[in-house]
Length: 479
Image (cartoon, rainbow, N blue to C red; front, side, top):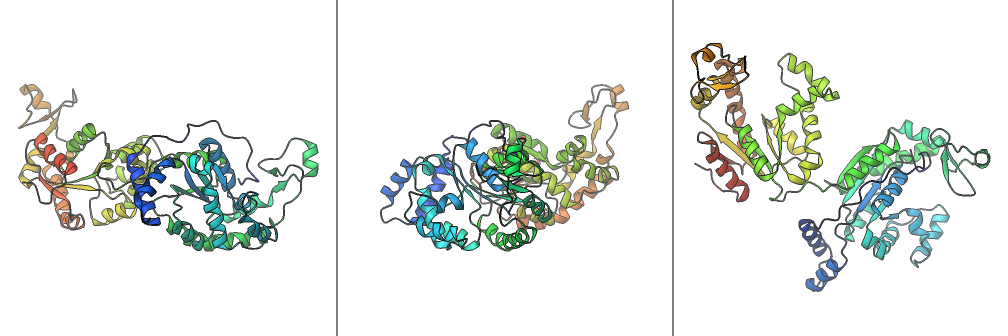
């Protein structure tokens, strides 16, 4: 699925790159440029930067091993995003660049182009009007950590970095099937894209440097370099499997480059509610989601939905539910990541409850990049929790829920047939409470800036305290 091996049909038209004026992104980008260039007179520099009107255009880097299809994906993205494609070839063969003369000579002699020269060519090309106004996609560059650092030093900051990945055996097989039309330069593949015209078939030639040994050597060099390039782009890099149909890879890449990155800005709340069972986390999450249009992420509900939808994860989860065992943290985090990586969570923010239950889960959550910027502990006394949960009942006839103290049944007939959920039994509630308090001290230490709220009061009073902590975080615990 390389430019050589993928069908040349362009995918259907997709929506163009978003052109909304994101003020925060504009300010963030301007701050980056000020820190990088450190102009003597920052005011004219910022005015000039604003006149470029390019803060929302694509700035994309696509990397991948030989035969991974990065050039095909880059070309298709350029068409859909109306951006400029920058490859090693068109940089060094740029007729309008005096700087490219030396690079062209080295390129034609199949010699390595010095990183300093290559990065200067990139800088020169990105300054041209089409790249400034419409954005750019850099195909296969940087290849080394030195190139990545030089690019960053010059203030060239991509918004999105995509790394295509596939098994070496697949890539070698793809490369061996490449064929080139010497008349048109069009590239075909013996398996994936064989031309129907016999005239074209007869003149196709085997390109140079695609033997199994040469491809294996290139792959070895790529793997040696890419592990040092990836750390240069934390939080903006996405790895996409190239071992799937080209169109599927393209749509995943397009979805990613049209997304806004997760941010630590306080106006994109990522709220974590912690507290024992029965402390009111679900209700407070629902109130927050309703008022601030956050995504309400309940971990337990996610697991149930995964099983109901019969997803791969759901099939793995089901045996644990049937045996009433805890779902392993690794599987739990995969389901959670799948939800938090969706566009609505990234753009709107989220309120999470039901996880983490212990320090290990909290560390896993942070390692995956889902760091909350607001954490609340709902503190409810043991007796109140017991009263809230052990007195809950359900009517098996109507499905109506009652509470023997706060919402008693209207008739003795209904009261006589009420049932208690086994999980609300006193022994079960005590076990859950003990488990929470066993881990709560570690969680409180980890989330040192968390706000503790008295959850043993009217739910809407609790909500007001939580809301004040989101709008203006308080330094002390709330009574």
